[in-house]
Length: 495
RNA sequence: GGCGCGGUAGCCAAGUGGUAAGGCAGAGGUCUGCAAAACCUCUAUCGUGAGUUCGAUUCUCACCCGCGCCUCCA
Image (cartoon, rainbow, N blue to C red; front, side, top):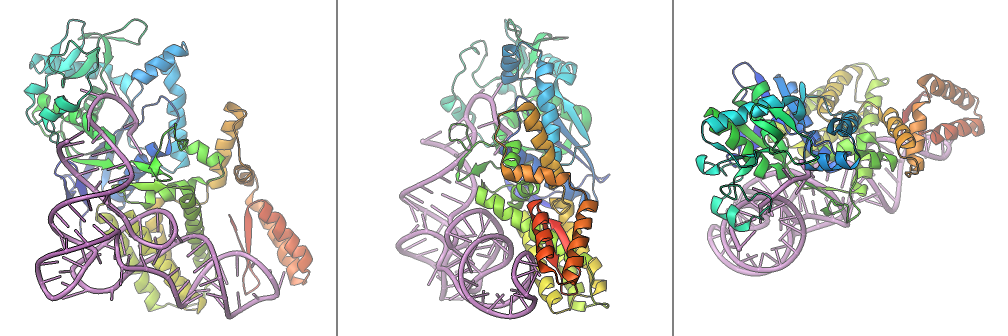
């Protein structure tokens, strides 16, 4: 079965066929770097990450472009307030965004591009639109897009033009537009605001033009897929389509993927409700990056995900279960080969592929793996998982982890980075005991742990349980769990 | 008001016209020096009402509730 995706443009789940050269050209709206990213932002980026990882797993080549919006009203306002340049202001948050991506195991797209590095390209597009009389220049030097010249406007968000006029709020400083629904391509400079000198005059770009300019520069006038949060569907993506297609006469993006907003504890995330969290907040509260990623990735991207602390804890337990299972497979097993296990592994791999082929159904995808875990554990308890079964079962786990990326335990290191950041830049910010413990565990090397484990085993062999339990307790304080196996060996893992 | 999405066990969350995956939590049990891990058993008639159908949680309609977009919030 081929990959099928819900295409906002058609309103249907459709086969997402690759282009002739097997290269997927995709553009995903990245962050506006005006502040630290919150978990809502990262739901979108994790969802896109799931897509890109699955495309790669399916043998596709990728050219994935992500933009960094580093100029907009908020940025201009805040940088002005801080009396620094736009770039000085955004640098810090751009860097923080990359750090957060790493924290959550989000792969870097092939190309990451900044809006402010593409001002001439944007001006070029606008000039082209103006030459076709699709864009017009207002008295103050701003440029607007003449929606009347693009009849299919609204095809993405299924909006009726008449209603846009009815319901829309009117921005008072846009009186020089011919029609209310026309949107700004270029904004004339205002005193004290960042501005650029270009072929079409001085000023700064409108919001939408950057994505058209950068997408077409790096992917061509028509490409495979464009993704973003659901809020971007209108007006942002609608306007991108209008600008681009009016100019080139070609279909801009064949597929449009929109990720639904998440809820936090059943409510829309907002600062006023006190349920607004950045990724860093959660880590400092003691939650592991892998838990956050697992929770965000686990619900299909088109479903409203209810992000809760219960869910975060559940995710942590789930990840632990998978990690423990993997350790078990990596440990000693009776020799031989078991056909049921071989079949289970194969069937699970097929089921996982099918689940993601079906519009990236990550819930079913992980469900299939957990089914394998239970069955294999049952068999292993009965001694029916053999040494030759480990490889196929581990392959199923690996197939899962190529998408979810939670099995390698990098949580301690990652938490340590966040804790260090908070101590450095946010003195006074609450750091939970759990976060500190996790961060401390990062400094605890495998060699140190192995040494203590050795002492534990020796004490146990001598039936000095008091001593062996004490060592186990000491390790537990550092977040290390010991498991005494029946054969006298010990397995350890970070909790 | 316009357009759209959803309401499934304590929580999260799949799914199907023929009586419901998975995870977490809980209870009991097995194993174990104790732990840990693991396994087994138990816990849902799928928002409400009506209709279509041999049969609906799955289709249709109405209603209730939640959520999203309607000019710059992922």
